[in-house]
Length: 323
Image 1 (tube, rainbow, N blue to C red):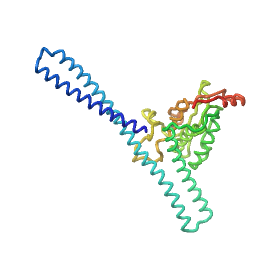
Image 2 (spheres, one colour):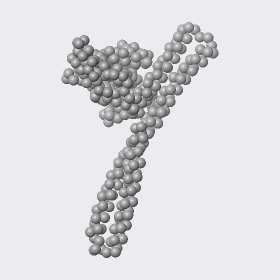
Image 3 (cartoon, rainbow, N blue to C red):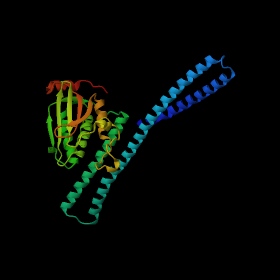
Image 4 (tube, rainbow, N blue to C red):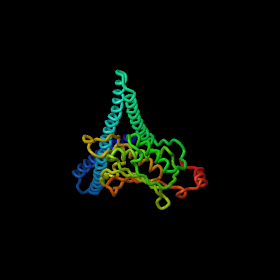
């Protein structure tokens, strides 16, 4: 849908510019003919046609510039989509090939119970990797179609974050203990699935690019009694200033495709940004100091006091939300 909208504009502009060019050409022909017939009698008309022709020429020039800009954007999007397809193909084939190898080994020869347990564990991890990829693509599709499932509820950010940390750490064969947490009680009104999409994608990004052992920090606190601020920081070099808005686009992955070592689709940060905006929040990336690294900040509208009483939470839960 979005790609069609981008490519329709250059086509429309091409038609408009062609019409303007024809009108301009006819006008200048008429100007030349009338000028040749009578230099003085039609001088006013000549100037009128000249003015109109000049205006058309300016519009044509502006149209060409806009057309070029939109064409470049369409080409860049097409290239990112092509890279996305290549990445998804690789991400699908790798775990499938791995599971096929393990299954062939189990079928062709006897293995010890210990080896069998290891094989099953590796296959389970491959399935979880596939499940994560499929869910990410489906999430992006739902956001693009603006489909909303479920009702908003009052949620404690700390509870949702802890669940996501455990899930993502397990997927990367790591321990949740590598994530250093400083979390104050903060409550928001949102759909649990929306918060999970934000936190999982930010944590996935941190685990993917973190060093060994990972040094990941997560904090949640209140800011000016209006915002709940979530920070996820890793220990890799920060994002260049010129790319800090670009990385939240669809299919965007920094660096050269030929030199890329980390798997990914370029959808994670796009999903996080889209969901945050839908929740009337803000997201940005900054440098982490110290030590050097990248830090993603999410601002979500907070509700109630920092530690709401059961009565306050119940009242907020009954408050109707916008859909």
